[in-house]
Image (cartoon, rainbow, N blue to C red; front, side, top):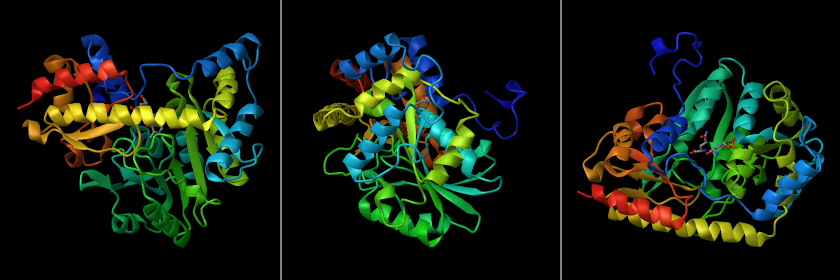
Length: 393
Ligand code: PMP
Ligand code: GLN
């Protein structure tokens, strides 16, 4: 949509059209295509967690405004989860904040912490709400581009260091990374931590895919590294880990001062949300390790199923070590423009995907990259792969 079609939209948001996820899901619906675009599973999460939500609704827990910071049961469960998985200790009353998904946590953190004119360094390709929220906060985004290297995307630490200026307020990190599937290594995260300490920067780290990590990769929360606990705002979400993306239960863990700042912005965005679901997520976070292990094993298998299909169809596949997305390059198919390719894909073979070019400041950088989601039933992935084979040159 051009700016003349959005005459009332202010200058801060003028560059942002309809989010690509809405555009592509609408295309999937109108064409009856298999939707490997927007990242949501096609099966719901654990039955006992769904039942916990039903119970909370029936028992009248959370049907009226829950407390602003989130229900105590959930804040306690989030703190226990961070302790159990990572040895990070947070006070549920002062250091945990429940939000309307990670999306609100990102918005509230940026609105609370960024002064107009501040620079925010973010990894590119970036999740689209980062750019919009930095803009709404009046900040300037400074992208540091992850580049293909040996079949996967990697961060250039020198580029990251060079991106920091006296005007940098914070680093906005995302690991496991959407859309590339990169999981930053302990060495890379240590270098990021050292930079943050040396330049006295805040770090907002989006770790919503913390449990979706494959092969030998390990998710290392930035807050566990030396000097980081006091300067890091960590963002999590139930959507990805428990396959309930519609519930929109997310959270922030940080110091009392940083949580207070984020809550100050959050209270004027939604104030509160998802009352009964908060109780259900509290139970989900206490599921035994077997749940998380099985979920991960299952998704890794799906990654390989779709990855093999994409390779057979002629795509260059960047092997993701995390998230439920595969980024591909369409050049071997004789294609150049991801957006045009994705618009035509439903017509050509009944599949919807996401053009990564929209996640770059310089669209040329991601011009030939297309992202596919593999959080779908095996038979759906197999059918999509067989349809995509029609593209093989
Ligand atoms: N951050 C990243 C990197 C994401 O991919 C998403 C999409 N789930 C979000 C944040 C938003 O999460 P939520 O649905 O919990 O708002
Ligand atoms: N995080 C999901 C994705 O990357 C989409 C969430 C949304 O639609 N905003 O596909």
